Amino acid sequence: MKKYFQFDELRTNYKTEFMAGLTTFLAMAYILFVNPSILAETGMDEQAVFAATAIAAAVGSLFMGIIAKYPIALAPGMGLNAFFAYTVVLGYGIPWETALAGVLASGIIFVIFTLTGLREIIINAIPANMKLAVGAGIGLFIAFIGLINSGIVVSNEATLVSLGDLASPTVLLAIFGVVISVVLLTVGLKAGIFYGMIVTAIVGMIFGLIAVPSGISGIVSAVPSLEPTFGQAFLHFGEIFTLEMLVVILTFLFVDFFDTAGTLVAVARQAGLMKDDKLPRAGKALFADSTATIVGAAVGTSTTTSYVESTSGVAVGGRSGFTAVVTAGFFLLALFFSPLLSVVTAEVTAPALIIVGVMMATALKQIEWERFEIAVPAFLTVLMMPLTYSIATGIAIGFIFYPITMILKGRAKEIHPIMYGLFVVFILYFIFLS
Image 1 (cartoon, rainbow, N blue to C red):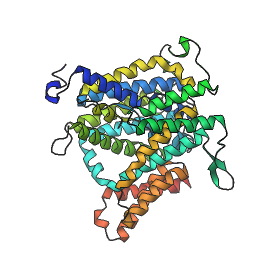
Image 2: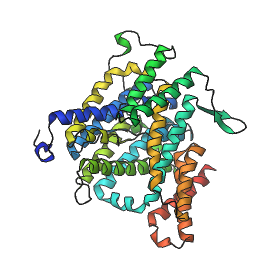
Image 3: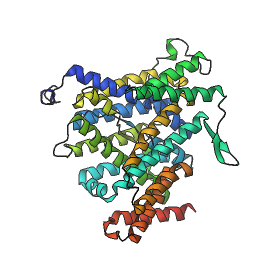
Image 4: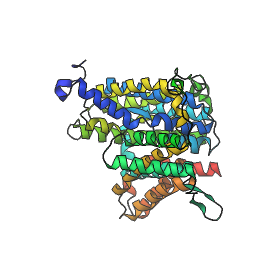
């Protein structure tokens, strides 16, 4: 095994890789509770989604570790789960079963792109500034959801939104969660989001805002059944052939595709695994990621993707795929702790959403704001996601304005034909919606 994972070449060992895998797991363990909380709003069974989340994360991390040999863990992606729940199901009124079929389709297309080499063409077709804008916009959208779910921000007939009741005990608990998470992350604790959730839940129980688990059965139990969600993506696959679902699938594919590419490069660069500024075994890594999405859709969760939190494991020495294998083992172990879902309320998960939003919004600094033809589509992409409560709408508006401003600026030759194709698709998308 040491030879397979190239321990000697990478100057690592079992102890280092184990600690790296554990660190990565702790840094991303929040998804075990946040993902079921978000997807349950669509009517999906929360216990089944918990199991699906853990299984998708375990399988995806195993694929990445064994096939691509990278210290990168996977799990259902933040942002993509919000798009699935709040835009596709609750916004468009599409049944969650059909939405899962859309996730499955995006995973299959991702695999095809990876095997045929089309991924390079698509990566080069989408301007870097627009990729950054999409990531930052999703961050604002996620943070907005966290603020609403916690009651920190509420609806208002006069101003649409306003500050919530700060005297409310549950709102105060959420604010405490944000503060403690910020403190933990600021002092350098890599798993600060997860630990912040734990501390917030404990404080909530102390003050009687969250029910205290009763006995060992309130902490550990048998693995939840996947029956409510398992296989639904395949059963409803025939329902995806509409223009509306085409846009949904494109969005799933687009966000996962570039989020994965960015994460792979970021983690590999930190681990010193880049060679001549290129990512070795990139095809295998993308194949592992796309296959994990198919598995996740099959068992019942939104798009599975590579997690940038893997950098926390790299920071403590993780260099080989064995790190990801260890992380996968902890996700499998987590299957037995589903009763803890009862103590992870909206006030506990909201700080995680807000903090993840902050992290994603850092992409804003890399956008070329000084170029007006870039600033307009980028700004509209970022702004319209939270304001329309739709990731797809933000992407559509930005991608419609991009070719317009570029052409008017005399930079038409810089626009890839694929961008013109997306321009037409999104125009049809708005006509269809109207």
